[in-house]
Amino acid sequence: MKQRLSLADIEDLTHSQQTNLRRVWIPERYDIAVSKMITNAETGEFKWIEYAVGKIDIMPGDLILNDLRITDGYSKISQSETVDAEDFMIEEPASFRKSESLPLLTIGQMISMLHMIDKRNYHFYLLTGNDKYASEIGDFNSELKSSILSKSSINDDIVDVLWTLLKTIL
Image (tube, rainbow, N blue to C red; front, side):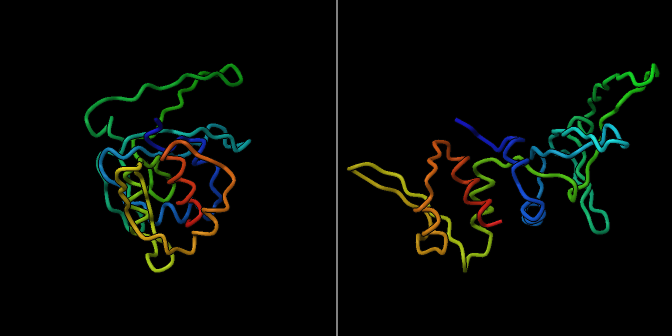
């Protein structure tokens, strides 16, 4: 079973959804996040860097998320590339700005976000059970009810269900 979002899930977000996700995300140590690193400034090429949040520094207007590997004393491996017969090293950064990062949320983090976001308009609801018992969380009196019930796609993983709901709200 899928435990967290993937890079493909994050790449599917619009710019507005990315901004809103950053706004509601409160980074904590051990969170997994991604950030873009420019690999070729002339062509605008980039690669995604996945990292675990270690130390968090507060800067004016932003948070600096230090890579856990660096925080805990490990060194990152550099990658050698050749361009025009000159060797140079592309070294991954040791820290990232929250304003440029996106979290790869876990099931629990998505449930927490859904619980925090605009409780007047959106309600998180989860129902499970069989013919002997049922358990539910939340209130199904939601503005999302019609869009949830009319959705033609079926998701088997709870991560995908939670992500679809969270993307709708973002």
